[in-house]
Amino acid sequence: NFMLTQPHSVSESPGKTVTISCTGSSGSIASNYVQWYQQRPGSAPTTVIYEDNQRPSGVPDRFSGSIDSSSNSASLTISGLKTEDEADYYCQSYDSSNQGVFGGGTKLTVL
Amino acid sequence: QVQLQESGPGLVKPSETLSLTCTVSGGSISSYYWSWIRQPPGKGLEWIGYIYYSGSTNYNPSLKSRVTISVDTSKNQFSLKLSSVTAADTAVYYCARAPLGAGAKGVYYYMDVWGKGTTVTVSS
Image: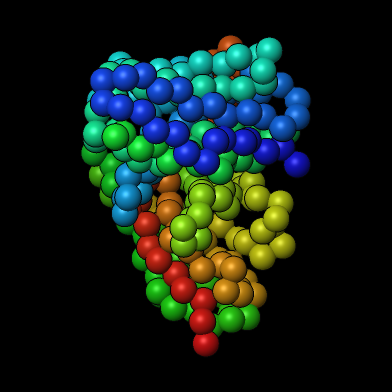
């Protein structure tokens, strides 16, 4: 079964840059698109990145996505961290049957 | 602006069937995939499955034997049924719109609009 692995938690100071990784278990993560969702406490998820590196309207350009085939991983980078960025972040892609797969989520603390 | 609202019982007994409906307002249910996702207390997101407005479906293999997703285009609604529930099915259930995208890697879908979620507890 295809799985996506994320670090359980990351922390960084306001104004700094943080990168959250998402590693594919098998095959090439670059074969399918990766999305990233932000979930603030008590709220539904919202999309911050789709199609590997595209931002929906309204998402600031401080958020960016990338794929690294050499490490079979996707990354979400948030620059100029703000306290409002503190949330859980989930990567999402697909298995060989086009079924959705989520990573386990990463808790971002901005301290 | 499209909005999604989940509805259904908040408490279901073990071995019974969980039934939820997602009502789409502010837009048509046509030409999109529509997904269900759940989140057990304190845990991550789990994709349950999707339905295309035409009726074709795709389910998480781990739930496939118990899941049915259906669509009613006349009511702009789609629904989730999960049979033989246990305490492990206790979760917040989200419905989401999943538009089709097309890029260099082919056709894909992603969740762009989510409902607020509804909590379902499985307990006697």
